[in-house]
Length: 107
Length: 127
Length: 134
Image 1 (cartoon, helix red, strand yellow):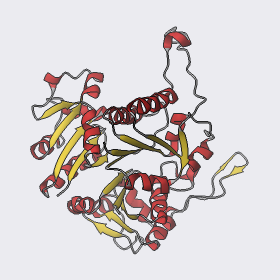
Image 2 (image 1 turned 90 degrees about the vertical axis):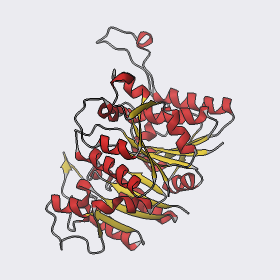
Image 3 (image 1 turned 60 degrees about the horizontal axis):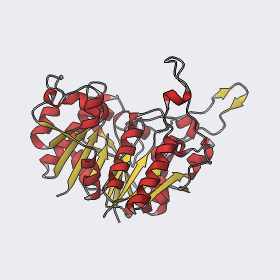
Image 4 (image 1 turned 45 degrees about the vertical axis):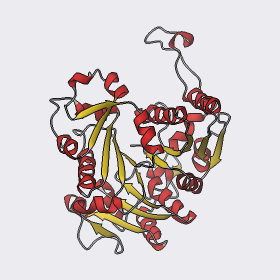
């Protein structure tokens, strides 16, 4: 089994492709792979509690989901405003996972 | 040697200026260098599997665009170099693409099987 | 100490991807990893040596006051960071992309390459991340 880092840079309401990327994360986890989703840039907009649900809750049930701390701050999203299943993380987490050989995919 | 999956989702981006789809071109260049590559066309990019695309005939002032992209032929050439090319079946249906009207050697994959296709490759370039 | 390869595609001033890419490169260098960066398409302009800052007339700021960043200075700073950490930063521009954009004058340390070089850098890396453009 492999370890995956799926980096989502866009919100899910603009196009269907982000929902497809969430689905990929779930399907990889369903196959037994270890999956981390890292929301960055406008991707963190989906991390707000109360944001219209387009599949991120299902992802969080099967994978670790992080929201980039700088992207949150840039958009005025406080940690207390996040969904319970999503944790803030620094970009160092991405560097660490890359250095550790995690298979990374950007969307 | 790693196996590379090139995933193209957004078609016709700067293709007239570049005379190529630069993601398909890059994938072809990796293949030429010796890499094991697979091309996955999804979303609107499934249209790259349609034969008979014709981007000729543009002119800006007196300046003709003399060499137009031929992306369908590029996909055929990539297959000829030994790369597998997949299209997402549901994306074809959504876009009304006929079952029998695609480049013959292009293989279909369902959305449900995408994770397996990704997992069969060591590195993913998601364009 | 590991080796990480990053691919970038976006030209300067067009996408948030650039800053995120630079943040990842910076973080990896600070952690003591070797970093290879392959610049494709518009990203080859990130290290173009003739970028200039400008004033902001809407905000009434002079060139000095506005202190507008040019990515070439960030690229230079990343090379300096690598040197202070004793790790390698390999900044490789797709040569054909450089030619068609006329950005051959690059910051010191940048070199010219091809997709075959990207493949070598990817094969040699522990981790690979390719950040595409939209």
